[in-house]
Length: 115
Image (cartoon, rainbow, N blue to C red; front, side, top):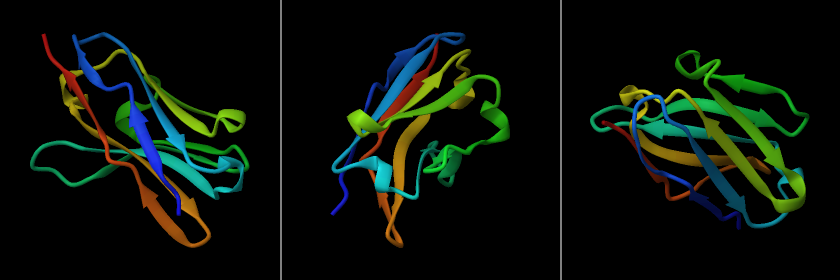
């Protein structure tokens, strides 16, 4: 059973930064990929960024150049550094892992960008 716990969300002003963390049970080195998704009120969940076990990274167009995904295998943690935040980035952010044919989700962390 894979458990994912997100942290680091909060309220930030436009132009500010936040760093999200996703702590996974077990070794993330064995995961096929991990990623971040977000869901704004009234909208569908959408991809933010993914990082594969081999290191390849993919970003959604709205966050390219502003967000950075990274992983620390020793700490079984994946990070999402978010800079130059915009009100449109307001959403619940979810961590996701692909492992042995299964898809696992964390409980989500709220990010609110507002002045």
